[in-house]
Image (cartoon, rainbow, N blue to C red; front, side, top):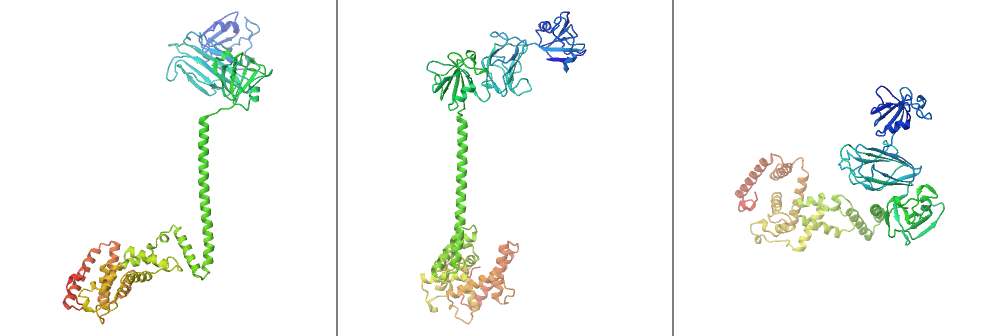
Length: 562
């Protein structure tokens, strides 16, 4: 191991003696029960299982000639030449070998510490296979264990510690060296372990030693070569998945294995003529390799990834085509729209209307998608028309005005359509005798016609009251449905835009009161209840006053809703 510095604390402490025939050979024999031995100051021999404070020195500082062998050096004063005793273990360089536990096939001893270093040429890997394995059982392999390293010493990555009856399987080194450590404690000893190792070129997948026969385990192609080796055979069989070397010079290739029976590695022992660092089978024994691996799981994963990528590509292309076509269509519609806008023909107007409707339907704006949310439609519904009646009016407007913009209608257009629809459903006489109407203006055909249009009863009553208040010089039943609609439109405009100056008469006060009440109610003001009570008092007062004067032919207060 080298020349080391010693001291009074001693680098080796288990056992020492002095001899006039001292030499490394004699000292090693006397230290056979220890892992290390050392010779110092000509006649001193020291033994130990551990190095204490070992500081290596230049070899020139160890110069004393051994008295028992003048061809060797036995240290110097406070300088010691240290050797490692292979009680079990060794340094192995053969392309094939067998390693067993001490006393194999009997039980191994207690307190054994065996170290093997297997070294292959550069560019080779070491394959290790266990044929027997039975060590003391422990969950962490703390007592008896076998440990493998991917290199010549314990500074390289460890494969792990193994014990019990579960050895490592299919071990292949990452470099051209392997360290194997076998350690036992002082209590329980178990049976044995037995392993074989072989060299192979790095990158090749070695499968093992197999039995062959006249039927041939490889049948697709074979040849003989005086330079045969796994490397050469692999090149000549590169188009097939399996290849093997047999009887030193025989190379065989195949797509599959026929009647493959695995044999112990010791039965394949012929040195390859083309590479003496490798084994080329034996008579009817073949070392088999794989050129590549068919990994079903890897193929499945690859196919899954491929399918995912293809699906993603299809989705991306679909989105791209959709966006591209949509943009092209919009560009075409824009060109057509410009052309149609410059055209004065009815066909052009209808086509322009259709394009505008398509553009609005493809828009994300709520106003574009639903004409019912326009201020015009909402204004008509506030007059008392039902939502269904307004929808039908919008549809009729769109059908009868193809030359106009889809949302160009006004509230007056919709009311006009609603009145026309009602007049078509029921022709209202222009002049109705007052003696046929009875005493209730709500029972007149005009009032009923308004309610059939969709106006509420309250809205019609308020319209009649306003008509009577603003037309005192006319007959009180002379109003028409058009008069009432005009009044309701005016009321709606007054509610939406509050005049700065209202008339001081009863109608002005009631209108202002109604507008303020609506505003308070929509704002959820706490003053709403108080204003509502005042409103009811005004309604009651007006009803009583009309009953007393009977100016408008009111019979009783039930004609008014409080």
